[in-house]
Amino acid sequence: MQSATIAIIGGGAAGFFAALSAKKHFPNKKVIIFEKSSKVLSKVKISGGGRCNVTNACFDNRKLAAFYPRGENNLRKAFEIFNAQSTVDWFESRNVPLKTFPDNCIFPQSNDSQSIIDCLLKESLALGVEIKFNQSITSIEVEQDTFKLFTREDNFSVERVIVTTGGQPKRSGLEWLEKLGHEIIDPVPSLFTFNMPANPIRDLMGNVVEKATVKVEGTKLIGKGPLLVTHWGMSGPAILQLSAWGARALFEKNYQFAVLVNWLDDEKEVDLHKRLDQIIREHGEKMIGNLNPFPMTSRLWNFLLEKTAIHPEMRWKDLGNKIRNKLVNTLLSDRYEVSGKTTFKEEFVTAGGISLHDVNFKTMESKLIPGMFFAGELLDIDGITGGFNFQAAWTTGFIAGKSVGLSN
Ligand SMILES: Cc1cc2nc3c(=O)[nH]c(=O)nc-3n(C[C@H](O)[C@H](O)[C@H](O)COP(=O)(O)OP(=O)(O)OC[C@H]3O[C@@H](n4cnc5c(N)ncnc54)[C@H](O)[C@@H]3O)c2cc1C
Image 1 (cartoon, rainbow, N blue to C red):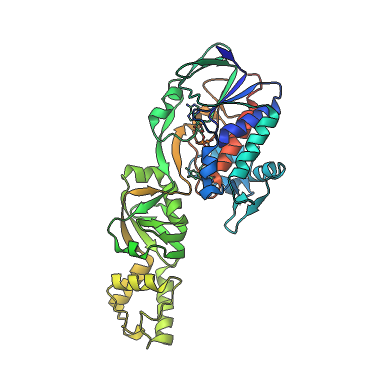
Image 2 (image 1 turned 60 degrees about the vertical axis):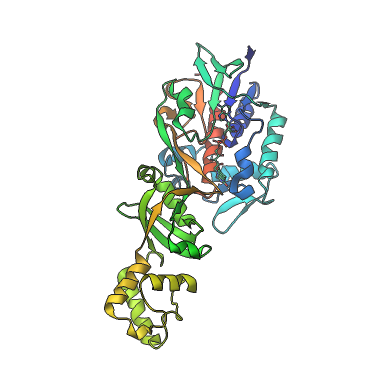
């Protein structure tokens, strides 16, 4: 039997931040990361297409919290302790210059996630954080003043434990924590793209509409922003937002639903009719297929015309009322059947996990088991794309580490 003081279970973003924060705040304690695989920080490595979108340039805590479909209220408080500015300062003060892109995503200036990994590893070496590889913790026993961590072959007695095992795709991955009394919110995927098998829109793969609004038919779910047509269906920020806000509702529909696309941002019918009046007045003699008045490629425009049964050689002035109404409907409320999803390769996360009711967000300590803390995606917290998921990991990891050495 070996003995240690503070155990961190899981060597990902949250685990490293928890370990570094614990060691910084309680330098006399022994901090050990138990990692089940032979590598740490593997998700950081592949994140953001290998560039690691480390946080988001949203420096208002209330606004930042609003990017989380699950966890908003709890994170708002947690950001008072460690927010996006804290992340920027943390990395930049450790010689990792960061760069903010026009969409507010923040990446290392090197454009290489390895810079983040190197920084975290260097810092843990300097502070004396120990890392144990190939140690999968399968259960925890709570004893009077200690926790006993079990792997298949070994067990370790520790004083405190921070669990940072990441998003678990299946409920069974959380059973060992459920056994200790914690409520588990069923895990479901978030951040995925929509499959539209056999839909001819897929022939337009690569087409982007910068400002679109997408609704899930029959619900209040809505996504706004760039929409990308892919080989399988639709992707882009508008769709990913929708997949995050609708993670549970869409799971319950078994990913069989319809979306209504407004190709013209959130333009209203009355305004579009006014626009069409003007086009007809000014360009009545022009052929509809040749004069595309909207911010979309002419391929997409012609696709939508075909869908509305408008011949591209028809002149604008010959657009009768009935067909004009049909065109308005196609532009503002274009219906597509979705059947299935594809995980977004740049970033995907799990919604669900340890219920936030069981955690004190001032310390990240379990309300049921004193001395046990949680951080990262294992919690029922997830954000939309844009660096928010790492921000939640840094914030909760930092707070857990800051509180873990305090006496109960
Ligand atoms: C392809 C991809 C790209 C992404 N890109 C971004 C991005 O650019 N920006 C962003 O904000 N988010 C991104 N994310 C999401 C982000 O990576 C996660 O939200 C974040 O890594 C969560 O950190 P974590 O430490 O909680 O969990 P993880 O990073 O999953 O780490 C958990 C660690 O615990 C270990 N572990 C699990 N169980 C045990 C056990 N029983 N015992 C011991 N160890 C265990 C695992 O092996 C792992 O090392 C991306 C995700 C994916 C999949």
